[in-house]
Image (cartoon, rainbow over all chains, first blue to last red; front, side, top):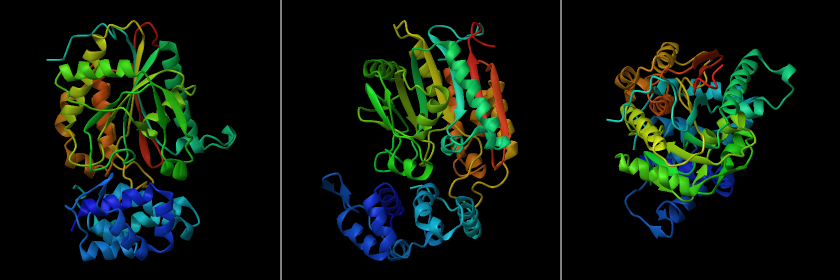
Length: 114
Length: 296
């Protein structure tokens, strides 16, 4: 398992419009493609020190922000990625942020350090 | 070792030190006609206007700009505790800030030679800053400048801290870096007038179960946090601002630590202005250290 790698996925996808579009359209396939091509990339080099657990991979593929939050994904990175993915379900940004916060309440504040 | 008596007010070439929020929503919110603004928004803009006027009165030539990257350029593959930009020109704001906050893309002049001298001064004082010759600055640098110096015409020396990816430097370290920065600025052989602008926040939660609650996250913390700066009580702040205390005040409350750095830059002087502006959802801090010649 790797909280770092989950954060890396969230961070990279949120900051790249092409990956964001893929994650919005086909999340499971996007996660599989990203894991194969980007997860271990450090510039032109590759690293091997991190791997997703099955639970992490499944939570990302399902875009299950509650499980990701509970597992200790960084709340700031998770939220900024979830805004564009969830906002169309809500009438306003205010409603999204309030409902998102309400959904997280049962999980308290998990440790999100890496 | 770096504390120096400066009871006569600001000396040397640091003519003004200002602290203010970097609320990324404020730019979009203030674009509509002023008569349609809420009282909250008007109150906040009044404070930004006052900071802009203070800065103008100080007639600075250069701005040392202190912010904290929000996972824009920096990530946990390479996370600097403190990093200084060393360029002649900076680009500001990132794709997802334009997307979410409608912030403008900006370019801001820099002064690479000056950044290098400030960096050397800090290294000499035991502050092993990271440096970047390709730094892009996020809303923590851009928003305060948009409201306090909208012309974006003065060269900046940007210094970014890690307030977001634990483990963080201690509160005492933030303060010590501020003292060292002031000492380094005071010893620059440079006739220009320096302003220092730092941004941060008080208790705040983003992406957590209490985010943007319709009241300040932790009003008691906010009151104490403003008072620590107002009374120049760095020791109390450093003692009380543990990681846990701050995270309990809200998961991104560590942005307050930049204000402790700023208190150090002001040589632990009491500010000439200190305010925690209560508004819906948060308290916004505004601090100013003006020299006697320009204070009103």
